[in-house]
Image (cartoon, rainbow, N blue to C red):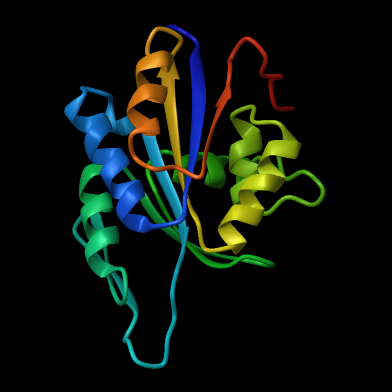
Length: 178
């Protein structure tokens, strides 16, 4: 199996993150290798809720259409309450990475559950801290596992979707999580 690189794009609007997923899908990227993370929005005016319907989690509230669409495209869904960040919704394989990191006690000092999941796939702690800050600021993270052959094309596609930043974490430079 080829080594995978990790691309993390940060978006300040859910529409841009959703556009990025759709653009990657149209370009033939494996949807099972994409994850999105974003804060949940609780407001007094909107009812917010979650429930399971068969094998899919459902959400209604301010961003219900967005999360419903993303969860329909990506594999896995979860809701976490992360100290210092707040309620966070996750779609994609990052759900399994977070749960695996928590069950395996991979949590590293100062990292949230989200950070532990990112650390378990080899993303450096300094980058994780930046991503946690981005989440606290209500931004969205798109995490893509891509082969080294796909990296340039993924970056080109993501650049067209108005990210605040795009970062590459190469498998050649990643230290295995311990």
